[in-house]
Length: 631
Ligand SMILES: Nc1ncnc2c1ncn2[C@@H]1O[C@H](COP(=O)(O)OP(=O)(O)OP(=O)(O)O)[C@@H](O)[C@H]1O
Ligand SMILES: [Mg+2]
Image (tube, rainbow, N blue to C red; front, side, top):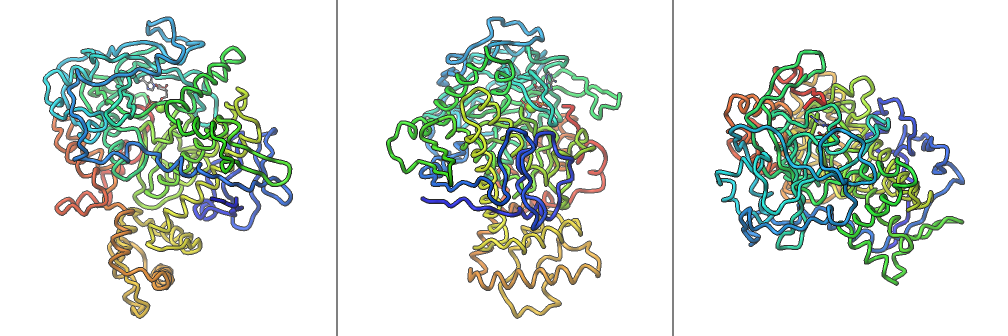
């Protein structure tokens, strides 16, 4: 397939809502700036990407790179229920600890906080204090990924094993070493300070899954902190992992959530008012928890550890991107990527370049899918960027209620709103810029290849974003102006993002609808608009109906298609908070109900409509819609 690399002038989001952040020190080319203005150049002195006349552009023939990225979310590819997967007890799981086997480890196994040099991990065991741990919630869908028999959740020892108080037979616990840029600044070694991997297992479909306890006690990477997690943040992580999977968005998964029975002291707002909160541990599951920072840390340590970047890259490609190894060995030159003029980027000659492009593309797709459902991650530091393109680290995240491009759920982010909703596409690119810089400093890819990966990020993001927004509107062709005008209206009137798109499928492709009736199908989402805003909305709906008519898609067909991409239910922060309030009183019913709800976000689920309501007044108290990193 020949894809001509096109120059795109603006993303609807960014062009409408100029980014509210002050630009980071080293900003790769912005995806887009104001309408009609030229693309900015990268500010990195050594970066030559630019989009002005006569500057470098690529013509790309990507061959099977596209098909390689199609099978991207292994979790999503596993049918939920009735897949005929094996049902194993915990003792029967099929372990295979490739990370510890193939990568250099720390010779020390103590948990004293320290710099761990020349190693990717330290063997440490869970050590959180535990007293009568209780199973709060569990995911049968995640158990199925592991071939784990759901009856195992009823085992009396289950909470003890998944709080780390009893070892998991066959496991090989370790904490990973990684670094990261936090809020644009290099933070040095971070690492699993409270997450401990229990090991990797292989399921009957040949998939590899890593199990990890978050909040299981100190490791050498805990720095000044306690290695623990509280129930409030663990409920959020548990539910949102499964909610994102339900939405079809690549994510780390959650197997179960247990209380530790011990209290953990936290200063929720960093205002000196700390309090004791119940401790808890989530067991997360992913094909890998490798992050951009997993490579950055070794590149940052100079010559001696550059070889570790290569070893880790080889390991990652071999285990998690095996199609790249195959592609590289192929003589089929249809994979070749050619450039215009003197520049040529040949992805078959360098597997690391092909890999960096795939990481860039996966990240771009991921961010586009976040924008589509109104998800704001909240802390997009490079240590929270999965190399597999998964959503990772559910801290102060939030789904948009009222549409607000500058929304950030993270109080720590308030001064600059670096990680606000509208900035996520640019931040994804900034992070890819750091990732490719790491690979080029380890001499795995050239500067041209690094620039090319960043360029692919931009293209892929725009392709995916346009496709998602077109589907949300139930149209067959992208209409930039229509989307820009809609988002503008939504921002002005603070319209609920989820409910509006869900209602939109009720609009009929009927150009004879009287003007006074155009807003009726959307009334429930537009209740608060003033009379002076009616005209703007009516004009938009008129244009929208014209587009519907010209698309020729029958109303019922379009409604079904739209309802399969516009969720009825998202995990709004206030819903999480209700479940947290009840759980802190020992009632886990709401956590379990919410899990069932978010597993099927596109279904109407009669009787559950109250979960689609807007946040009540109490949701605006601190700590509900606005959170800190304290968890
Ligand atoms: N209570 C804690 N004890 C020890 N280390 C911590 C604690 N909280 C955070 N950290 C560490 O601080 C760094 C940044 O924290 P961040 O909030 O991004 O991660 P996290 O929520 O702990 O974990 P993850 O990214 O694995 O989901 C990480 O190295 C993390 O392990
Ligand atoms: Mg993190």
